[in-house]
Amino acid sequence: MGQGAAAGTPPFAAETAVELVGVGKSFGPVTAVRELSLAIRRGEVLTLLGPSGCGKTTLLNMIAGFEEPSAGRILIDGRDVTEVPPYLRDTGMVFQSYALFPHMDVFENVAFGLRMRKLPKAKIAAEVMRALEMVKLGGLERRRVRQLSGGQQQRVALARAIVLRPKVLLLDEPLSALDKNLRAQMQVELKELHERTRLTTLFVTHDQGEALSLSDRIVVMSRGEIQQIAAPIELYRHPANSFVASFIGEINRLPPARCRLSGGEIVFSLAGIELTAARRDDLALGDGQQVHLFVRPEHLAVAAEAAGGRNRIACRVVTHVYQGTHTLTRVEAGALGVLQLRVPGGAVIERAPPGSEIGVEINLDEAVALPD
Ligand SMILES: Nc1ncnc2c1ncn2[C@@H]1O[C@H](COP(=O)(O)OP(=O)(O)OP(=O)(O)O)[C@@H](O)[C@H]1O
Ligand SMILES: [Mg+2]
Figure 1 (spheres, helix red, strand yellow):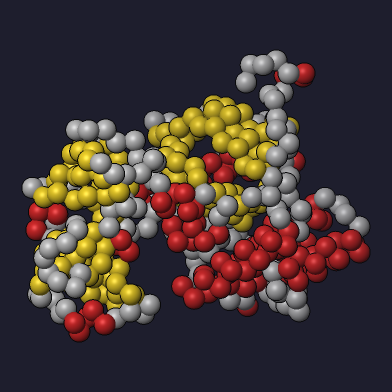
Figure 2 (figure 1 turned 45 degrees about the vertical axis):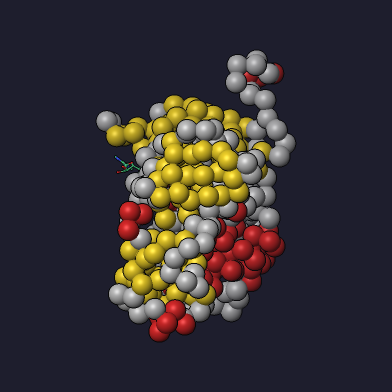
């Protein structure tokens, strides 16, 4: 900003489809979105992920033009649209509730935006049929919306958004109303749809699994603020803070630890015991530093013997939750509190029933260590 480019427009990178510059929104005393800056890259699926009330819908509504920012500028394809009304912004939106027209059939719902643009009839028909084919609704164009399943209604809402060939597709929890199986199926279809259209997409969800599977990059939000922006794998393996660590996937939080560097190892002293990890370049840990360790359930394993060996803790089994491919086993680990393990298969349920003593090995080589 403030570089005084021609006509007062900020510098703009061609790979950026949407740019938010210091955008914030308050409703009276409530700050829904704190001033933040964010660029959506052309063709990517960027996901806003965060708990209920963290400002996801508000941010989407500001980009679509349904809410006016209290601060900042919004650019789409380099054009400042902050004062441009929604229908002139070239955005396509699927709302949290699909907001279809119940009295119209599928065709008319999808054609609506094109009719508003006064396109010729034949062109409208061709575009609508193309969009319906894309969401696999070909043949249902004369059905009433009321006569469709939840998944089909969701597809109509998607077709209605993509038919306008928007510069950015804004999807506000489009799958939240669907049951688990249909949701998983639609996740795959959304991914395929994106591969076909390459539409720049801003996807909103509070479901971390959905975010991990659908996104090129994820923006983790909490209380109107960005906590971290990263690709799914990066976010899972290197969360920037304890909020992100706990929000993305299952994770065990260990008691505060003090580090000591010893040869090629880091020794963590916590709750009266010592655990070790191989030294890593990505962990800038100094001697005597206080940290919190976060360990994924897949990095805990049932040991052959109860005691002895590296990072082996004597534990008592509390419960098993069988999940088909694996079992989530909760154990009481003395001073470390309750830990959760992800054990392949289901054999552990019979081998170590609740109440039995087992040894658990903690692999800290991929643990997240955050400064206290
Ligand atoms: N029109 C409004 N007037 C007053 N407060 C509002 C309004 N819209 C949203 N808020 C508040 O702003 C905050 C963010 O709301 P928002 O709807 O953006 O959250 P969200 O992340 O989309 O949540 P959810 O996952 O439940 O949909 C909340 O505290 C909400 O109560
Ligand atoms: Mg919302």
